[in-house]
Every structure is written in structure tokens, then in C-alpha cells.
Amino acid sequence: MISLAGRDILYSWGKFVFTGMGLGLLIGITLSMAGIYRGMVEDAKALLDNSGADLWVVQKDTLGPYAEPSSLYDDIWREIRSMPEVEQAANITYLTMQIGKQDGDVRAMVTGLTPGEPGTPGWPPYLIAGRQITRSHYEAVADIASGFKLGDRIQIRRSRYTIVGLTRRMVSSNGDPMVFIPLKDAQEAQFLKDNDAIWKQRRRTAQNPAFNRPVVPDLLDAIIASQSVNPYVNAVLVRVETGHSPEEVAESIRRWKRLTVYTRGQMEEILVGKLIATSARQIFMFLVILAIVSSAIVAFIIYTLTLGKIREIAVLKLIGTKNRTIVGLIMQQSIALGLIGFVVGKISATLLMAPLFPKYVLLQPLDSIIGFIAVVMICALSSIIAIRAALRVDPAEAIGG
Amino acid sequence: MAAKGILIQGLKKRYGSGDTAVDALKAVDMHVAPGEVVGLIGPSGSGKSTLLKCLGAVIEPTAGKIILDNDIIYDDGWKVKDLRALRRDRIGFVFQAPYLIPFLDVTDNVALLPMLAGMSNLEARKRAIELFEALDVKHRAKAMPSQLSGGEQQRVAIARGLVNQPPVILADEPTAPLDSERALTVIRILNDMAKRFETAIIVVTHDEKIIPTFKRIYHIRDGATYEEKGQGRGFE
Ligand SMILES: Nc1ncnc2c1ncn2[C@@H]1O[C@H](COP(=O)(O)OP(=O)(O)O)[C@@H](O)[C@H]1O
Ligand SMILES: [Mg+2]
Image (cartoon, protein in one colour):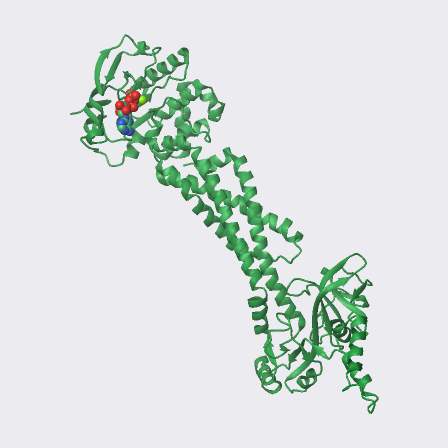
């Protein structure tokens, strides 16, 4: 027996190839959407992995520092550091902002790092060029995705920084590249007010008789000085001594310091389950819509192709073709259309869409397999209308009326 | 009762029931022997298509008897279980238009039938090619139907009707779209094939050009047949 579906496809290959390409672009978008979601999860995990922390200590009852604002005094880390189970503890600040460059600006997550050795929690674990920050001011390490180059001068608030090192795959959970600067600079950047505001605040403080007391002449200066430093950080990153369970250490910090502490697993739960949950739902909706549109297209094309063959189907039935063979003819064509679409979609997602998307698109083989199965199933289902039409054809129609 | 070819006795067909019932066939009696080509002639609405559909086993008659090659296939009800196999193996069809499958080449259009009956592709194609030789279309065996002339297409369609060597071929106005020379060629071919394969052929027609060629003609009017001796002497 010959393959009727195969022969028909070869005969009208133009229709199949062009429809398949259109369908393929839709499938490509679908795969890219799934890839964007995977990329977001992957970015979130990279953010956590690269920070080199076992625990995140944040302001009490917040989901900080990524999903909610959190601020802690910048000396808490010492108390945590002194706990015997803690190997390292380091302050960290995060501030997402526009960074000025000669040509336009770049959105980035500015991260303030505790001075120390490479390997301190929060430090980029590896560089692809240049060196780590060694001075305590005005040096920066940037993710390559920011577009900055070694030696570039960038503007963060009122200060200029020199890029001394470049790193890779260090992005916020929004996909914004990270730019690392010394903690003190970052605290200042987070807190800094413009000159007018500082001047006004000084004047208000000076006007307050409680602060401006002739009997204590240094009081006013001390208060103004304390107002112009930022004693806060967003979180303390903690690395636990090997041999201790992060969960136990977290529990004792919670108990003794009255702070909220998250383990790596809980943090991932917050990032994936809360921070990117809305995006994930959006992407899921897109996937559903794309699936519906794709199946409508397949159903329409296969139905049209079948209506064009009603006479042939009547003849085939009259000369004794089994219904099963005719169902096979239509369903195989529908699935063939899906296969063409899938191949075009996979290629366009890999070669065309993933590199062009501004976000990280992670195309996982598993998603491709799921996509492939979905395409085959959607195509098989979409052919049902056409199959019903074909089964209703009366072989008597082949004999003139 | 036994009869070679096809024998039809007292065949009736009523469409619908009650007040709106239509008796399309009231009394059809025919016999076509193997190797014989008979004409079936009647005005529009006389029941020709209904008769072909009954003989072609795509609609069920209401009463009567159909005997095909000594085998009772209908006797106030179907006597064979698998009507699809009956159509495939024991009835050949030739339609008004060739109705070839456009996406199969000429050989596979014909070879498809034996393939459907379970013959190997190779053998089925061999059998198709043999017929093409007899029908003078062998040089077109690899062509697609759309590349053939109308006459060539109709000859391929005849080959399809013959390929499973059915005892009867039902031809529904097979010469309607052809000019008189080609129409006569088709009738000559049908006569040749009837003899060669011992096939009984019923040609429904109202084509004036070919009516004179039949040795025997059945007239049908208001669902009843009567036989007439034709003027034709065939194509000896
Ligand atoms: N499906 C049907 N239902 C009801 N009446 C029908 C149907 N098909 C044909 N008829 C009637 O049966 C009679 C014979 O029709 P038909 O066999 O088509 O004649 P012919 O082919 O000779 O023109 C006509 O009166 C026609 O109206
Ligand atoms: Mg008719």
C-alpha cells in the first residue's frame, strides 16, 4: 500500500510548506516564550548561586532584598559574623537604577559590596576580563550585558566610576545586568539627596531649638553629620561553616537577633514563586493563546484541503477504501503540517528569536519535547473537523445525480 | 437460480415513506452476459442513477434480486456482509468524468485498487501497466492525471474499473464530455475489454452518438425497464 497522505503532500507541497512556515513562526514564538520563562528562573538561580550565600538576613517580616524593600543597620553583620557556625557574613545593597554613560543610559542593578577578598558573599565569583574592585571608592565591576567595557567611565548619581572588571550571567531577577561598586559608595548612592535638600535639612535641623543649643556647641554639627551618612544596608549575606546546617543557623539568627532569615531554598521559592510569578502567568496566557491560534490555523487549513478533495474522497470510498485509510490520510497530513511547523519553529527560535530577544532565552530540550508532543496532539485534534466532514461524504456522490 | 454476468429481477427502490415516498424504481429486470456491453437509456428522472447506486451497493434497494456471477448479492436484503469489499473486488465503476486522484500518478491511480485489496505494490503496478498496454496509454504511465488529455484520462479511468477484474462494470455516461470520435473510441475499448476479460458492462447514456453501437438496449421510464434490440453489431 502507498501512503496517500504522503503523495498528497508531495503533490501540493507548496501549500504545506507555506502554511508550515507560518505555523512554524507561531511555534517559534511559543518556544521562545517558554524559553523566556526558563531564562527568568535561571537568572534568579544564577543571582542566588553567584552571591555565594547560604542565608539571606533581611529586615524583620519582609521578603527582601529582591522581592521587597528591606533595610538593616550596617553593623548587624558583626554580631552574625561572631556566631561560631558562621564562616562569613557581608553587607550588601541592591538598587536598580539608570546608569549614565556617554551615549544614553543603561538600566542596571547597582550592588554594593563589602570590601574584602574575592569570595566574600555577594562578590562576583568569576570575571571574564579585568580585575575585582581593590579600592574602596569609584571602581566598578559590570556584567557584560550592560554593554560597558573595561576603562569605561560611568555615572551613578553624582559620582563617576571606572569599570575595572567584567563578569557574565550576573543579572537581577528582572534580567537587568548587575554593576558592583564598593559598599560605602552604594550606601551613599542609595541615600544621596541633592544639594538643595541637604541645605534645607540643615536649616530645619538648625532651627530646631532642641538640637541647636548654645550650651552644647558641638551638638548641631554632630547631628548634621549623622544625618548625612546612610547606616543601612538591604541584607546580610551569610555563609555557614561547613558541617552546619543552614536551617539551624537561620533558626538561631531568627531567635537571637529577631531578624527574618531565608535559606537558599526559601529565597528561590520567593524569587520564582512570587517575584516572577506574574510574568510566568502572563507567559502562560500567551502560550494558551498561541496554542489556540495554532490549532485554529491547522484546523482551517486541513478543513479547506479536505473540502477540496470531497469528490476524490467519494471516489475513494466508492472503490472500497476503508474509513480508517481516509481518516489516516487527513490526520497524517495534519500531523505532517505540525512537523513542518515544529522544525521551522525550533530553527527560528534557536537561530532567530533567542539571540534577538533582550532577555535571556533558555531553550531546554525538555520544553522542545513537550512542545513537540503538544504540536502533534493539537494537530491531531485540529483535524477532527475535517475528518468528520470526510466521513460524512457519501460514496453515492461519486455517481451522478 | 444461477447466472453469469449480472442478473436483476424485479428490483424496486422507494425513497422516503408515507405521503412523500418516491418510487424511483418499480420493476427493473435486466440480464447482461459476460463479454456483453448493453446501453441503459432513459429520460431525466427515470431512475438511471438510482439503479446504478443500487447495483453499485451504495444505496439499498427496497425489494427484488441481484445476482452477480452466480452469487446472490441481494434478495430482499443484502446477502453479502462487506459491501465495501464487494464494491472493491466485484464491481467496476467508470464515471461521467474520469475522477482520477490528482495526487497519484497514472499507474498508482489504477494500482491503488488491487493494493486496497491487499496485493503488493509491485504486482499491483504490474497489473496496471498490462492494462495500459491494452488501452494504449502505457507511454503515460508515469504522468500525473492533470498532464493527460480528456480521452487519455477516461482510458485510465476505464483501466481502474477493470483492474480488479470484476464481473460487472457500471459506466455512468462515460462519453458525455468527449467528442464523437473519442466517444466511439471509448465504446470500442469497452467492447474490447468486455470480451477480453469476460466482463458484463452496463453503459448509462443518452449520448446519441453511441446509442447506435449497442446490440442490446434497456430503456427505463418511470422506474421500469423494457428491452429493445439495438441496431449495433458491435465492433467485431
Ligand atoms: N435521494 C433521493 N430522495 C428522494 N427522491 C430521489 C432521490 N434521488 C432520486 N430521487 C427521485 O427518484 C427519481 C429517479 O431519480 P434518478 O435516479 O436520479 O433519475 P435519473 O438519474 O434517471 O435522472 C426522481 O424522481 C428523483 O426525484
Ligand atoms: Mg441521473
